[in-house]
Image (tube, rainbow, N blue to C red; front, side):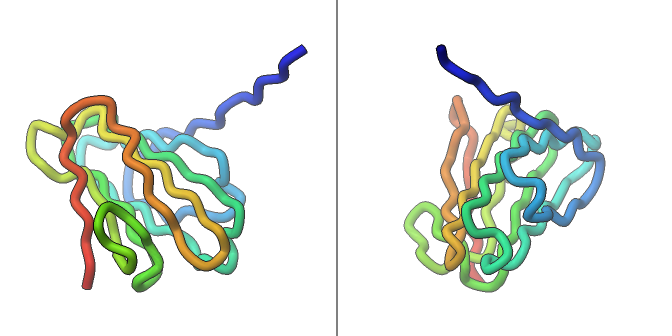
Length: 119
């Protein structure tokens, strides 16, 4: 017999500070405006997984503590986003933490442009 866990979802209407207890949550950006998600300190988020889905045609930005995000072609990124106009909807990113770094996975089903930001 297989067991399947339910996925927790949160529809977010404005900037949001992610908490370690939000692990295994699918955040759905749905405000009608740009949304920024701020990740917790990596030491507090060991073994946490957060998933972000852009359900609107506005920017979705995920910021990590300074130089703790590993993303496409960047081992010391500060943020990752779905930013290209008319390519926002359906953009999806999952972030996993090992207690030292965050690792960003592009889950976008289509041609959404994912932008990596370094300071």
